[in-house]
Image (tube, rainbow, N blue to C red; front, side, top):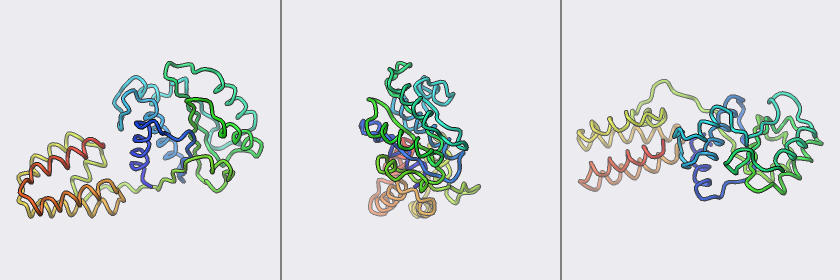
Amino acid sequence: MKKVEVFSIVNELIKNKKLYHSIIISNENQTNLDEISTEILRQIYCLNNSFENDGCDWCLKVVNKNNLNIFYIGDSISKISKDDIKELIIKFSSSGIEDNKNKVYILANGENLSESASNALLKFLEEPPKNTYALILTKDRNKILSTIKSRCKLFSIENEIIKEKFDSQIIKFFLNKEKKKLLKYLISFKKMERSEIIADLNIAFENSIDLNIKFLQELLLDTINEIKETNYINLILENLFIKMYEVI
């Protein structure tokens, strides 16, 4: 699964107040794990439930790591002891320090849990306090106790290869979250002939398949088919770019 897919799923769950209380994030790269967990944290605390960092006070608290309702366990290298988990339980059994009611603990990394720590954490996962969420990071999910995994939602995230050059400008602007350039490109895009527009969208569609961006695959394919069948090309293109704009 790609990072953008995970972020989209989490955002929808938060908006619908159905976020899983315990999540395991699996990736082979520690830097990726840290970046992914920070973005999920930002979404959990964002005042506006924004898909992207909108600069609200709580987004800034998360990014700057000064949110007192977030508790970090482990250093991704050393063993995590039963005492570490006991300290966590004591902290999270008390009321939140910050005004935002949500409390989240980040465990780096799940494969470093000792047997006694795993058993202690298991009991905490079974009956979490209200408004408490767990993000368990791991570079090797197979080393996490199966009973812990059974109580968590697993997101296994692929290592993504960032291309220096994209065949499609649309894909480039989308992946780089360049909103202004995307809208500017729409202006010139609408001036093209129908055949040129379809050819360009087909390239973007092929790129979205290569990058496994399912959201864009469906959106681009529907757009191509609509343009082939109607003369309202500008309106269709505007709808396409607006939907892309709203996601990035």
